[in-house]
Length: 563
Image 1 (cartoon, one colour):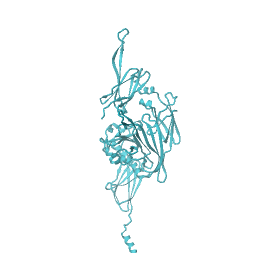
Image 2 (cartoon, helix red, strand yellow):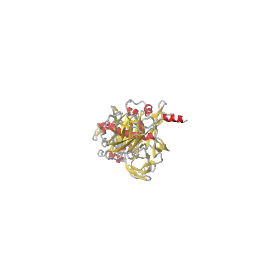
Image 3 (spheres, one colour):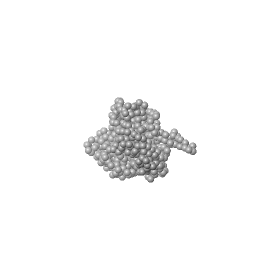
Image 4 (tube, one colour):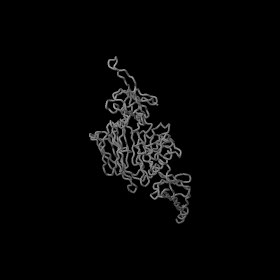
């Protein structure tokens, strides 16, 4: 027995001594520690060995390494990336390295999107602004993917389902369900290869499944090889953010795909949210409303989470054509989403808790007397929207403590293409913030829209130019309105009037949403309205604007050829 034990001891390997790499990351400007930098430890061959985030002291420890040659690559949003030279780690040794991160040289404030925004590039070359912007987005997505892979957080989420009418967008029903557990990103995606091969919308026995892209999908080679990127300027709803838009490359129309925009804060370079829409769907179900949004949030410890997400899907209805065959059509929308209300570490410590407040109020008519039912109220940058009841009242709950911009509108004003100015309000946890809003009159809207152009006895003609077959807007279409003028002869002559003596008219171009507006159109005259796009002219509609009406809304339909 003793001999056997000695032999076993002799052939057993010697205990392995752990090798260690200690890294410290500081800012080159202030020499202060950089918290939440993402660090990659790579072998000499370029293979990734480990990655992690620096702590509040800017430090990071890689332990249990094999002896060998390594390099470090350090990335931080708003900072230039740094890669060290190769260094050797010997048996039993601890190697220390210091890295100083310089500020990024990208200047996003006030950039001219037109310079590069027209080009959509697959994996754009370094040095282009779009490439530099993608590099900042990639850092945020990489940190989010790292957080996701660790599964270190317990998410408390509230999921919801809302059914919305296609025309009125009135919420008919809402179901809420709370869940909790340690998990990866708290919404379901699929591997990039699956989504790009089989589509972001896939058939299921219970109905079509719509998938949102997570950080790993957006970073994947299959996605980057099949989508091109360009810059996009944010509108008022984007709050001054700069967008990195993407779309499928040509030829990718076999399966449902996505196009969208990643919105970045031009001051901090932080990724705020992704909005996207589904493409290559059935033509009868296509709509710019079908899509979704994924928000991103950087936590104090440098990790990233998805605090809110939603997907708006079409609800299919069926009708029968003249031959009795069933034809699908877009009947309404279903919005499915979720909100993270609390994030806990494995030890049970809460690091994010969505303490919330409420915005309540009343919407009145233009005289400020009668309550206005059916006005739509929402907050900028969120999917939340509600409609005023018979008493003109509304309530938006579950809002995190911060400043909000409240948007109020009504179908009648939307027809005029008018959006009232947003109302700024501060939400405090546990408190109710009140709003009283008086809706402007149609005459006031027209007066502001046609200031300096409107004359006595005239009105405004406005509306949208649409494809007659799909009802989709036609941006850039020409709209003409024509009318005939006559001269009146003196009494006693054989005829009451000559005419028409001359044809007058006005013309305008529809904007990016297909909306048009023509001021100073005469009241009570017989008008002919014509739409023109790419050489195709509508048949021409005839109408009159009644006296003192101020405005009339008219949809111009153009019968375009199928492509």
